[in-house]
Length: 462
Ligand code: ACO
Image (cartoon, rainbow, N blue to C red; front, top):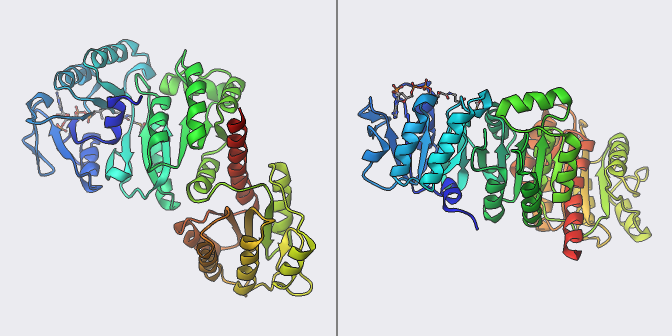
């Protein structure tokens, strides 16, 4: 059962910003401005004893003075005032506190953090943080963070235990056309933890895939993580990047968010047991998330590569073998069909090599065959930039075919070349077709989808 406080994080009817500042450039000002600018439709109440009005809204001396119920209170006052305003929020029957303030267990101030949790328990409130950059939930037009404010809505949820990295990645998702449902900063996890948030997102119809930047779990929560994540990964894919793999990295993680780093092998085993996919870099995590966000699960394992370059075809073949992607051996009939899409010196085997003289029509015909053939379950399209085929023309043609076939098979695209290929990939990504700047990345991203499909099949047999 998801608790009311966690629900209120994603569906607050009203928000108080305690420590909303009058001064542009301060965190308490930026959060309030982001909430207003991103279009949150609920009620917003700035709280600041020194102000009458902030950003055009009436300000209150205390949360207790607000003449309305308050579901969420965002705390942006210095550490020494946090307990006092938290107590007031409790008396106001606030459901969830979002505590931005730093200076708690991450710097050894365990006592204040424990007191904060005591206050929350006393009043049946939940706490996100402390030491966080906030929360964003795009279906509600809510951006209660001090990060960038141009978030692109979409089905990828991102949970981050690191603040600065989380904020940085918010900006990166915008640049990379990655649509997000939620961005949740976890910080010290004094109360609400990664599992609580994942449990909510597993039920959230606006989220298709959950991504997590994890530094470490709280002592004693490992078993719960595995047990609950096992249930969650049966509903939705979860991709984790676990920092602190090395000894020194683990020590750095421990002092960053005050969490127990633990042995990396233990984490790897726990992820495996829980069906959580582990990415090694943030880029990889989002590469995979993009496939889960936009592509159907495959009906089977047989994969075809369609390319205009032999070299990228070979690289993709290696990557396929290394990552457990099964390349189809096409039947003679299928080879015959592919032969008609290429000059006589092309190759209808797998990779299907349309050759360097391929134009849009060759790709379109080969793609149609791939969608129609019952032998093929997964499609990888590769493109090497040539002066006779502009990637910005190829991209819309691919989109058209994928739509014509209702995207009934997973497809990933790898494009290698100059600036025009980036523009081509941008067109594809905007239209929900995962595109990557190398054949290997395309293959590895598809392999994550296939691995998850295998995991679900295995689970359904248990
Ligand atoms: N109730 C409400 N507001 C109050 C109260 C009160 N009792 N008392 C004071 N305020 C007001 C202040 O007057 C001020 O408003 P003003 O600017 O209009 O005067 C506002 O609250 C903020 O108080 P300041 O004393 O100005 O505090 P400041 O903004 O400098 O710092 C902050 C507060 C941001 C919470 C700081 O203590 C902090 O923790 N910073 C780190 C935050 C952070 O990085 N979190 C982790 C994020 S992740 C990452 O690393 C990116």
